Length: 98
Image (tube, rainbow, N blue to C red):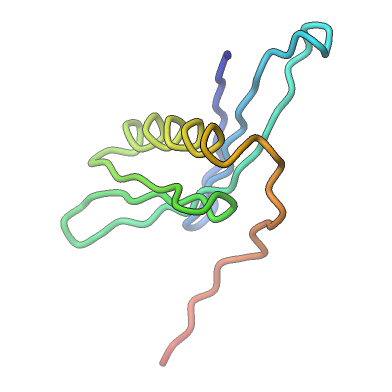
């Protein structure tokens, strides 16, 4: 499996495009996109979560390492949960004052 990544930062989330070479598609790359929520804690660690995949999250000290780790986490979650397309999608991120 070849994995490529592209990301577009917008506020606190990033969209990852995971590409796979499929023998059945005549060598064309098929993309699966996942929305990744990225936060930073008080100690400076970046925390990533994929809302479409239950339990899919990781953390790292740098964004580059975080992206590598979340790709691995997505692959593992897909292996465990199956490769069906996600049934939910991110609508938005909203701050609420209380």
